[in-house]
Length: 56
Image (cartoon, rainbow, N blue to C red; front, side, top):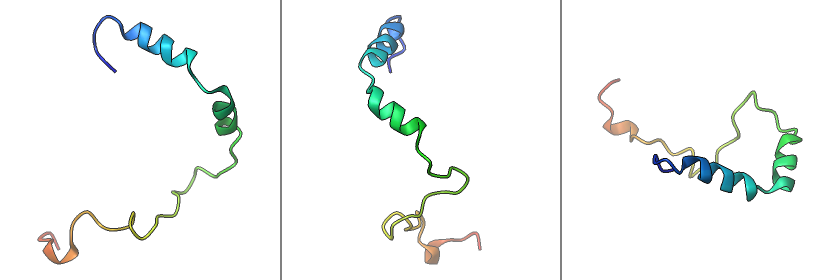
């Protein structure tokens, strides 16, 4: 989002183009929010290679 004086019109435009059905579905989603979703093997890959760490 830009930081110029037209920010209000961007918010208004986003509100006008919101997908009401998707918002309704998201509001009624019963997936628990108290624990993180399970990660795939690709997503669970650490950002730093364990062999390269120097803080151990």
